[in-house]
Image (cartoon, rainbow, N blue to C red; front, side, top):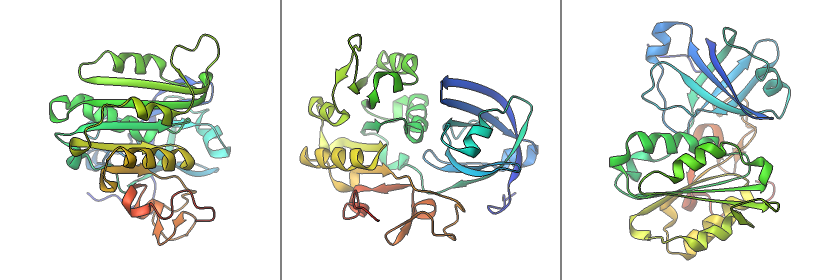
Length: 278
């Protein structure tokens, strides 16, 4: 059964988790069991969530591709649609279209050391990668997770980062521009942490998401450490409205983020990264 990408299907809220004052996770299941069985995605792809009578918004999928029962989305309240989604409770229904876009190169990452770099509050696109790797740990090498936030209070999932840091062959580094007197991690930019890495470029692959300025600085730092442009992947953000490359709102040079991304290699977009008006 092939889902029509232009028509939303009904999804029920099974659970709701408040991650921080402005961030929450909706756990969804398609109402039609046949549609739920037909639904599949790859880490890094996104869905369009439709709130009836309000509108729809693009949200990254954070659950595992082999979870056949629930489809999880972690959402930050930033506008009218997300404000409405934040009020939903278990048992209520929304519309869902997807999945869309090109995800992370998980097949290419197998057998290699994996570096995850995130900045700001936009870490949801790589949470799916971390979950994916931890459920298939024997297929990957060393996992390094670097998270940077502007202020210490912006760090969500602190308990989860603490749990990840205790896992074998896993390192977690955290930075805050404004850490405060009790902040136990690095004071400064997330890109400062790249200098602490024991990176072996020949066996490493990096996946980054966050503000575009951070993506540019981090990518250039990794390139100076010898990582190839084809081994650095970035999840880009734009205003995605149709998810099919029709409306043009997410055009990024010759590409459309919704259709040709949101994941690109650094080599693909190095000439556009950080340029105003692109």
